[in-house]
Image (cartoon, rainbow, N blue to C red; front, side):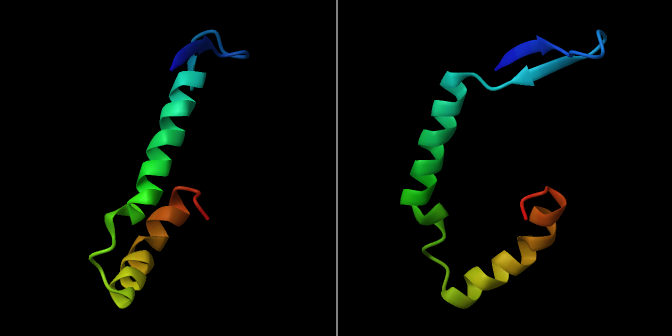
Length: 64
């Protein structure tokens, strides 16, 4: 992470991901995908239920 001054507000500081941080995110994402997000122990119906349960949280986070 890098700290950068806000271009319009001298009181604020912005955080920006570095190339090293982006590479770490990419590796972690690949590991999660390879592990099927550790959801393999759930059946199809349970996975759908979990997805339905998390949908409002994801929507509020801007994921949809």
